[in-house]
Length: 294
Image: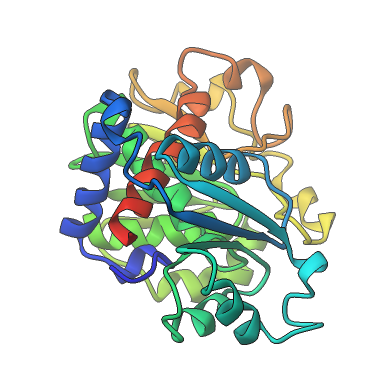
C-alpha cells in the first residue's frame, strides 16, 4: 500500500486488515508505542479541523513518532511554490504526509509522484479515514456490517461518496435519504454507483425502516452556500425518526454537529448515539493506516 486516498482503491481484504490492526492497537496500545520511533508525520491543512488534527497528531505520537503541522497559507502551498516542489522538499524530511484540502485532484496528482506516502485526511471529494473508522465503530457496536442496513439522511457530500464506495465493496444495504430538490441535483451522480442493495428516496420513513444504523452530517459542507438548508428543514434525525429503525439501531455523525439542525440534542446525547466513540476510533484506524504505509 503506497497511499491512502480513497476507499475504492482497496479490496475488502486490505480494508479488513487495517481494521484488524486498529482493533489490536485499541486493545493493547503499549505493544505499538515504538512502532514509528524515529519517523515523522507531516500534516498540511487547508480546511479547519478538530478531530482529524488531534487524532492524527496524538495517534502518531502514541506510536513513538514526531509530528510537523503545516498550514497551507503559511507555506504557500501551490502559490509561492508549486505543489510538486513542496512535496519533494518535504520528502527530504518526513516519512508520511497527511493532507486535508479543497481539491481532491491535487492529492491524486501528488500521489502519482510517489515521493512519500500520502493520506487523504479529507478532500472536497471524499473522506476515507472517516468512513473506514465508521466501519470499525459499526463492527464494535452492532457486530459487523454483513447483512446490516444503513440509512444516510443528509446531503450528497464527501462522506457519502466514501460511504457509497464502502457499500460497493461490502454490499451492505444502504438507503440514501435526501429532499427532492437535492436528489434532483445529484441523482445522476449517485446512479453511477447504484446496485441492488442501494436505495434512493426522499421519504425518511421509507429510508429508516428496519435499519441498523442511521447516519447524518452537516446539511452544508465547509465552504458551501447555506441556501440549501431550507430544503432540509424536515430532515432532522431525532428520536421520532429512530423509532422507525430497528430497536437496537445506533446513531452516527462524523461531527461537528449542528445541534437541533441535522440532529436533535436529545438524540445526540442519548444511549443510541455512538458519536464520541466514533470520533475516538478515528485515532486507532488512522494509526493502523500509517503502520500499513510505513
